[in-house]
Length: 436
Ligand code: XUL
Ligand code: CO
Image (tube, rainbow, N blue to C red; front, side, top):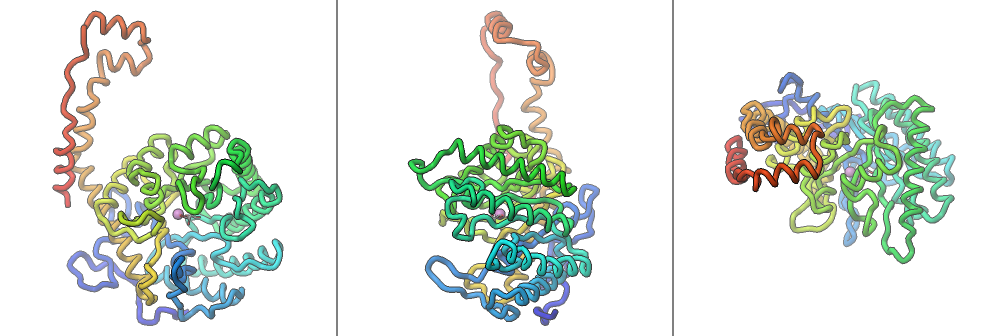
């Protein structure tokens, strides 16, 4: 393959370089906190945006016409595209990729023909993985594009659609397992509702719980040892998705006995659509032991939908990396660029600019987060802020020695709680800015 003849391997050249096709901050083998940047970040390229997005939007036709794509839905074209994808990832130096079943191979005339198409392209993916050493971060099934899923997949009122979806996930899990995928993702594209007058929430959630438990059983059967991930998103395409945010997902996992088998794949633009920050979603998931992987992108403050832009804001990436480091890193998850070039960025080289920018923004965030941690000011402040829980009454409460009655007694004797200390938010914001 030589789809990008003018591009050679993207190398680290350092902050002083003026080469736009080089990394200024991402130096894969440089050690930070005792681990290489490559192992901290575990960058992953997504197949659906980078190799399937055509630039169309609700107002306009495709703008991205790739020279390697013959414009047909043939299996041959899909195989060729797979080889181009690996040339791109190899030149970029991304160690991982992720795909939906329908990104890589075309839908056939029947369930079985679709599966045969998939197997034919997966042969090429396996060959290319072996040739390049690039690995599969996660696989997933597209249970939202085809009209059969208009009312949902696992939450469809049509039992046969549930059955189709189950069969499709079985196949996608087998393929993920064959390719050594380290995780398997469920993003419930149409698992939600548009109108409560036609929806039985309880029955739909029970079906979704049953569907996920079937995945756990099947993983045991085929020896798939990767992590299952649910990807929260509050809306789009449905008005209200059941997996609306980290808290809703974790409640669902607890309710259906899935906490030992699932973690979350947290996406920046989904967090903001849910009215949260990315840092909030990561910290909440981490606190519950559910931080699995991230879909790295950003939205646009002025637009209310999932624009999936590449992350370039180093304040955001610093917050993300601070939180990932706090919970011991992201492996076996990764930093997966669920992001697309804009429809006006029509040249293949724009795919390189986009990914280089995202990787450098995260590498810089990692460096900044490590510097903040090395300085220790935040930890010191937190330790101080909660220190009255370390001894005396606080320690007694934490260890379970007290009840409402004993605490009523304590306050009756004491008369009031001791005075509060300042939260020092402005001081801390200024402190963080010192590192930029
Ligand atoms: C949709 C989204 C998906 C998932 C995988 O908003 O993020 O691409 O990441 O299905
Ligand atoms: Co995503």
